[in-house]
Length: 104
Image (tube, rainbow, N blue to C red):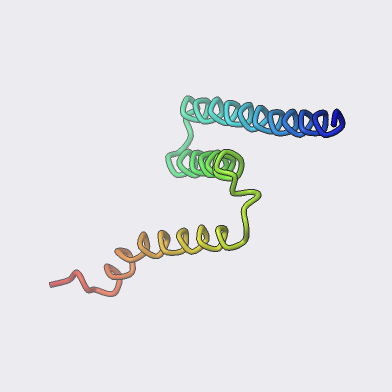
């Protein structure tokens, strides 16, 4: 029975180590975000870099703290479908505006 208890403790230690690593990565990326805001970059480059950092941080949170990294494929497909609909809804105004639907 002690083997099972020690295996369980080692498994918990492994998970805690992963969470601490992700936490440190999120803190480093937060410092990078603040540092980027202090550097005087052209606006398009600053926005692009900030969005890349935010995407990485969001991915870390979703994968590890929301446990999506170990979920079944169905949940990942639902997440991908949600992202696809979100992108489509964001593109909808640009598409309708370029077709002239807003011109009276």
